[in-house]
Amino acid sequence: MARAALEAARTVQASRHSPGYWHQAEEAYRRGQLFYEERSWSRAKEEFVRSRLAAERAENSARLIRQKTGEVL
Image (cartoon, rainbow, N blue to C red; front, side, top):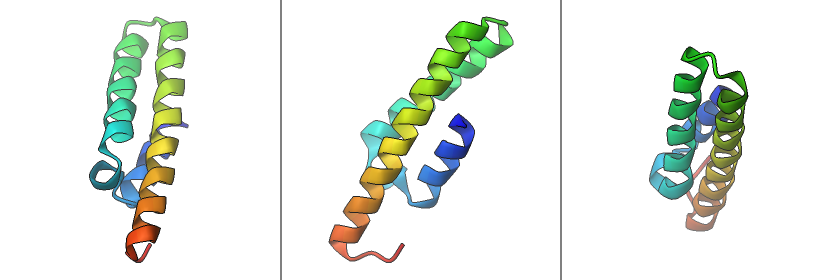
């Protein structure tokens, strides 16, 4: 779910339009991957959930900003 949310945010250029949320999403995803590799399942899950939420916020924010500035989605 977190990976899909990051991809959706990437398609609307969230890194450019909503860099704060985008950075939070990427960092949480990286931490989740590290915890997953360490087999710390509950901590990995927490980070992936954080990543998904931040990516969804980044996507929504980027869409809103692009709509306000007249960019085509």
